[in-house]
Figure 1 (cartoon, helix red, strand yellow):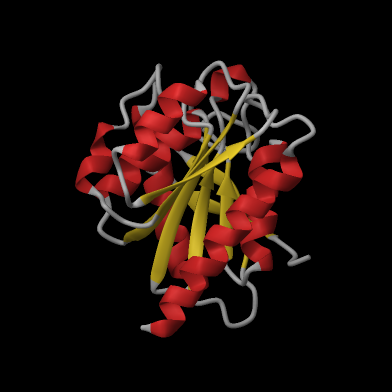
Figure 2 (cartoon, rainbow, N blue to C red):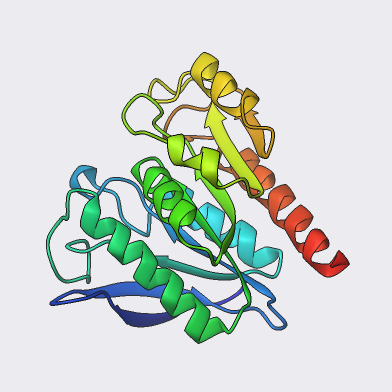
Length: 214
């Protein structure tokens, strides 16, 4: 397992973000990981976030997970989704500076998937996305039409916030999105963290191979 180091990222006026950074030897790409909704107990120690971090680090990616403003050791207060976009951009800045990787990706789980999508679509540095349990009925993911980069979308067949039929329509109309539907998993992936990590690992290996081939 690749060890992580604690660090604090500047997040704008009166905001400092608690984060964890891991940089494997020879890392050529890095991924920021966004946690689920802060007002419903989401933080960077969420088991899904940790599983994604472990899977990416195991494939040689530099990783940065962090707490949104007002969560854990991060200062500030919840920003209604707007401030959290600023936090994700600050995390990308921090990963780029600390890890020195030229290729950047952003991942997110639930609410964090929406933040990852919005920020990733607007940031030219982001060359890949991972959307875990995107709550398709709660947030607009239409920005992905303008950001046709390698994207992994993962959902469980028992997720009420990302129904299988909606998920299949969402991924079918976007051929650059690779779908992974995990049988029996709910929104929280209870008992299904292993196949979640396997799906992320496959995505990371493919992305790494494509980068090495260039």
